[in-house]
Amino acid sequence: MTVPTQDPGYQAAGAPPHADEVRGSSLGDLMRQVTTDLSTLMRQEVELAKAEIRQEGKKAGKAAGLFGGAGFGGYMVALFVSIAIWQFLDNVMDSGLAALIVAVVWAAVAAVLYSMGKKNAERIRGLKQTNDSVQRIPDALKPHPEGVIR
Image (spheres, rainbow, N blue to C red):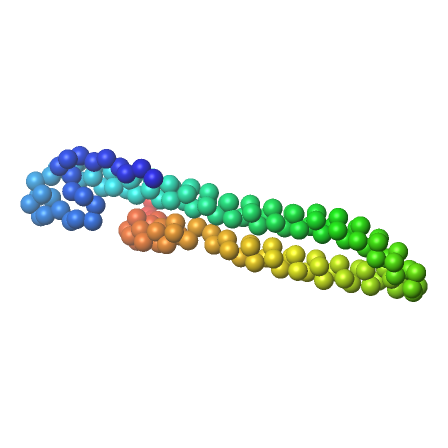
């Protein structure tokens, strides 16, 4: 994130100006300082949101990849192992019962793979820092449509 540059005579953010400095400033200078501060705040909020989206996007991509891999791997394993077990059990019992046993076993495998993917997806936490930061913006800067008279 970039740090904004300011005039050498401008006070650092967080340090309130002295009454003499405010009295000595023109309305235009004060408005320029407020506008600069708001612009800096908005740029920093956008940069924070971008960084969080990138970070959380990586986690979401990993979870999606695991879900996809689990699905494809589960399908292939289920297909070939099911055929082999079905053929093996067909020698011992009825073919329909053998198929049902194989299906139940692979349902359990799919449930395990799903729970692993779900655990990974739960690690995605959203834009927590951006949300916290935006909520600290003073109420005076937030729009109040019910109080606007046109």
